[in-house]
Every structure is written in C-alpha cells, then in structure tokens.
Length: 265
Ligand SMILES: [Zn+2]
Image 1 (cartoon, rainbow, N blue to C red):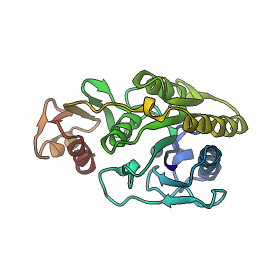
Image 2: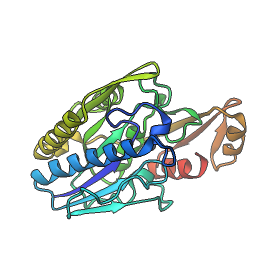
Image 3: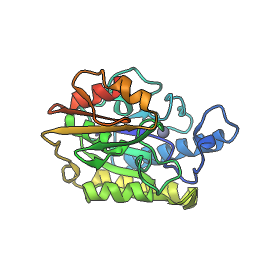
Image 4: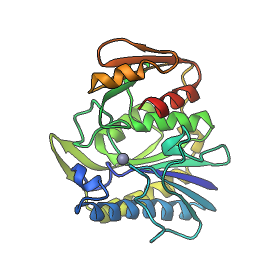
C-alpha cells in the first residue's frame, strides 16, 4: 500500500493562537513538535495496516514545519511548495491507495476554531457551489480528481463534523472543541493513540466507500477582507466581480479551480 499524508497545524491537539502556528514566534516549537507527533502516529497506524511507502506533504505555511525526526524509514517528506496547483496535495497521483489528513481545521466563516480559515486568513470565506469551503473540501476534491480516496482526517471537532457530512465513511479523530477564542483539547497522548488506532482501522477498512464524486460544475466565490484584492482578482481569466469584495469563477474542470486559487489567493 502506498499512502499519502497532508499535514497542517491549525487542527492539532492544543493549538489556539496564531503565535503557536508561526515559525519565528517563541510559542511555535511546542506545537511543531505536536504536529510531528501526530504525523508520526498516522505513520505508525499506516505501517500497522501494511503500508509499504508513505509520502508526507508538510502543508502548513511555507511547508517547513516537519523533519524526519521520529518518522519511519519508509517515509518521503515533501517540504516547501513547488508552485504546482495541487498545493497541500503536491505529488498526489493515482499510484496512491489512500490519503490521510492530519491537523486539519475549520473553514473561514466558521466560529468553532479560533484559527478557522481557508487558505489565506485575508479571505473571509470561499464558497464552492454555494457551500462554505474548507481546505479539506478543496483537497478532497483534488484527491477525487486523481482517483484517490481520503480515508482519515484528524483536526478540530467542527471540521470533523463537516467531513462526516460530506462522507460518513471517512474516519475522524476530534482533538479540539472551539468556543469563542478558546478551545477544549484532549491530551496529546490520547491524540497519538487515537490517530494511530483509527488510521490503522481506516486503512484496513473499505477504502472505496470513502470516495467523493467530483461535482460536474464548479461555482467558486471568493470574499476578500480587503476590496483591493477583489479588484486585482477580477482580472483573472473568466473571473467576475460581483460586489466590492467578492469575485466569482465558474468552470467544469476542477484543475482550473486549483489553477485559479494558485494565482488569485
Ligand atoms: Zn496551516
């Protein structure tokens, strides 16, 4: 089995403030250590399920949060970003049997994680086909585009609910429950054990039940906090400005959505 892991930080156990997600801040090392441990737990679970090869995309900020420290020898680590539109799913293709998402978080427009956002914090929200879109949704569509099922997601409780609404067969582990500017977290040791056990169970289960069909048409609305960004974005091919701060892009090809996000966000 060949497994892909996309790892973010704003949904790992205990994280609540941007200082904890920002490399040059003193609070950061505690939380990058936790991110590595949660990825390590996923790798251990995957190996118990028989993984031969595990590719890990370090998908937070500049992609320079993870190192091989504590990771098994059958891992490959993708650090930094190539610029390819797959972004947080870089190098994913149909040679992978399944994908896992670690440290994922609620979408922009949600009030259930103090760090809720989608792609960039200056976006008030992204809607795809009229629904608020998470990074999970954007990336699970990328996985569908190349025919790979996403079978496991760990992150905040609201994100996990959102995942189960999209496909109840995708296994989730809830680590943080957001209330206003606070979170209630489970213990990191419990987070480690649960991720390891549930990743193993997910990969031993029916992977195909986790597949998500790609919509036939994509209507993507971006709402910027800053109106000047909407003006600039409106010059992207086939983009329409629909208000002072919002632009709309429509296509039948999901890769064109990803290309647009690469150049506009
Ligand atoms: Zn992130």
